[in-house]
Length: 335
Image (cartoon, rainbow, N blue to C red):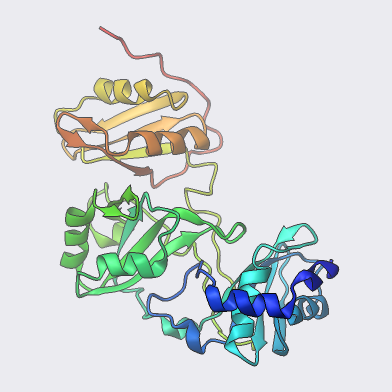
């Protein structure tokens, strides 16, 4: 496993380092400055990897100041400290995605949790349809036109290192959060139009302010090799196959249950099991047979116009009970 690392000639690597920098992935603080960082976080480590092997692999990027492996039942993680920043940057460039025992390592800058402001009491909004290249810093820059914007996090798949296409933005002021939802939905960020909604019911009192999961992120509690933990939730609707319901917001009060059924049937996303509309509140729900079908429907229906208003689609806040029997709806009448 280690022989492949000898392909990197020091002179070639030095030349490459002068031309490029590793692209930050994962949840780095918006103002994070890697220029002073000499430590890297290593995630998705196979349970068979030892601390000694981890150190041997990461020594290929430069002499180590320390190495700490934190073992977990399914997938371990760790921190590697270097004597200088270029070695840490080289480790991110050359070792991110490297296979050890069949698992691709996730390598990124390590940062202290204290570098982020405590936003637990702030107002959080969900931001969907993010381009793959959008980072925390990009997202923060977009929403920082509001002075009370306190944090921005793109959700990343800790196994692939790729963006999940959505994130969460925090605000100290509720009016700013509402203003961001109203003003920035449909705006272009990168090469996509983003959509915004409340992330938690705690941000408002109406049922249509859907639940998000701003805990589905890799958060390091220590930027050194002294320890830390990785908190990653697989229970978010995007990752949980028991979620099969699409929330449909911003509906005109004129939209009937039959009309919503027709709209989603026309998408051809999958088997529709149930359609409900709260006409007085301007939202509804469409339940599909499978999680993947619901995910496709969210992607396909979001932004479509019905009765002059653009539908805003996201996951329903409740999972489908496992004992729910499949009972597909009959196709809507074409008359």
